Image (cartoon, rainbow, N blue to C red; front, side, top):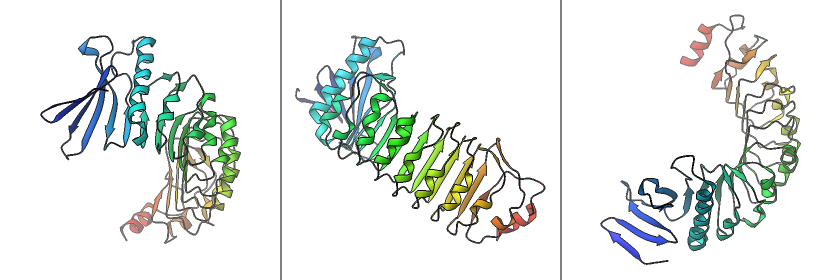
Amino acid sequence: MSDFKTTREVTQYSIGDGYWYSRKDAFDVEIRSFAVNLDGDIGKQICLIGEYDINGLAFTGILAPENWSIEYIEQHCRLAGEVLKEVGHRVLWLDLYHFQILETLDFLDFTPNLKWLRVECKLKKPYDFAKLSKLEELTVWYGKAFSSIFECTSIRELEIFKMDAYGAENIRKLFLLKKLWIRQTSVKSIDGLSDLKNLERLSFSHVPKMESIASIQECQNISRLSFDCCKRVEDWEMIGKLSNLKTLYMCSCGILNDVNFLKPLENLESVSVVGERMKLVDGKVRWLYENPKIKDIHLPWRKDFDISLEEVWGRERS
């Protein structure tokens, strides 16, 4: 590594074939970015990493034309490794964003204190996530190369795309999980949820083949629960077993016979059943509006509800 070069408020610091650019933003917060010129053309200079408050790095990926060759991408990753080798010990968060595919994540070995990580790309070579013993928050585009994330038991918040049957079973190993977002998966059930006793927030988005949510009844600490585009669920009544549930959000989940399964929920404060593809068959919903604890209600309105719009509006004004 070479010495610093300071010009006015911008500090330039070379690493490998690239440079750090350090500057102060409008709020006097130091922002650092890493730029490299891969082919000598200043027009294709890219931002590889942005570091904020000296605590984290954001790999923003290739911001130049999408038709760059694989050689450029591979060089990109080598430079990422060079940078992390130098500063990785003080990196707390790392954002691998905009990459479509990565050969390896071995450079994460240089980030022993990492707490937050986002990897939304395909990975060729499996990485042992158990080595990230301090990782607490993870967003991942799942694939077989990511199967070891379930061995990283320090994770407390997980957003996972494309989870398969292996993940649906082995997610039970992440017993410290408090927040979980499951997105764009084709599994029919997620049995591993039954062991996540610390779970407080659970969200399903675009899980079109899921038929059962029976496993959530064991997660008695859930206070916020949401479903988006989950049309095949057959046992919605399981929601009524979550005694600490405060907020329920359901969007475009097909046909609901009724909402009577919510009656046992004494702590419920907010109910949203919305979306163009959401239909409520039974119009007996007066009990929901007359519950003084439930402050926020959104339902797909029907003329044959057992409460009038005027009564609903009067309740909202009071």
